[in-house]
Length: 270
Image (tube, rainbow, N blue to C red):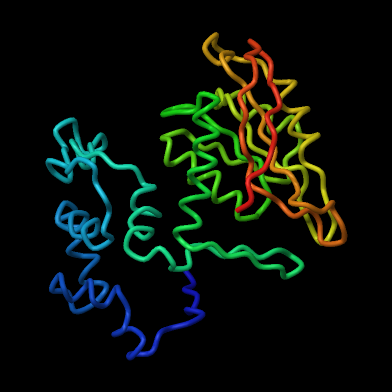
């Protein structure tokens, strides 16, 4: 087997200044191979140390790291523990350092937008409130058919906050590919954008999302309770050479239509 040389190696000074170096030495390991060896021999010790190092926020502490009583292949991890990843990803930083930069979004044309943790948390809360209003909660599948913009991350975090199941959909997918994935996931909501920019050219997305949603058939009766397509609309200017400027979708409840998808569109500026 041919071993490819590393493209980059840190200097000794860079390695010693890293978080990994500090973590290893806090655990009494003088090298990375030694850390890997100890982790393999005692995974409970390693994963307990790691989640504490990462500062994972638990709403209920775990009783133990690993329960192997059903058999090692069926190990239950952190039994008794409860958490929402949104607390660790956003809320703890919003509380400790609200003005810290949380996310940067840059378009193909070089336009850049930034959100602090305070701004990100507020934006996610608005989207989560809209999703909650149309019935999204724990276990509900939500399709994310969005371009690579900040709103994509906001939508994902809103799903995380609510305990919903995010179903990522590649922005280049056609209607049939989206329909199949929505159907397989039994998704009740699809978040999309009016358009995206690909290689400098605006590409419409909402018509493709509409075609996919209209062609979807629910697999179970409960899936027909509330079906919504939510569109992110341009913020004050139409699509031009640089494409549309996206806003965060806002959701307004509509009368329920069993087995059909109702469009719910609007905007909240990030």
